[in-house]
Length: 191
Image (cartoon, rainbow, N blue to C red):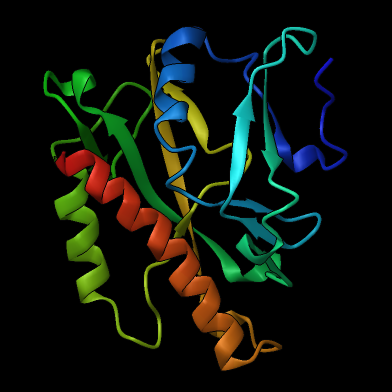
């Protein structure tokens, strides 16, 4: 029997998700490509697996790889994690293929601007200063549903300047670790 993690930040409730299968297919696209943040232990996990244990109905469970301690970033305080207002949406939602990025999500409105994910992310990252790079992560509650049918992901980001207790080397390791995973998502989308 697969156990729930001791850290409740890593057990996401899917009870409000109506189209569970579509949500599962969508979130699994990011398992090896986007890092996950846990505020209760102040850690970012870049190597983990996602499970959907039958005995814990309607739960998504994230299990960090215990052997990949070098892929876990410690001491990441919650004041350094900021909402972006950006959402990853499946292209099928707007009659296209692939992933798209949008910044307007209303109850029943996607707004007028959806951009291809890779191009939009690279443009955002290029516009940021080196002192405040765009470092996207996910957390509990970021998997949502649009119009009771389509899964979407809200993104948070790490604001390195808020990690005043960390050395420059530690901040660089976080940035490089998270962006390396994101690059693997870009590569997968370009295949």
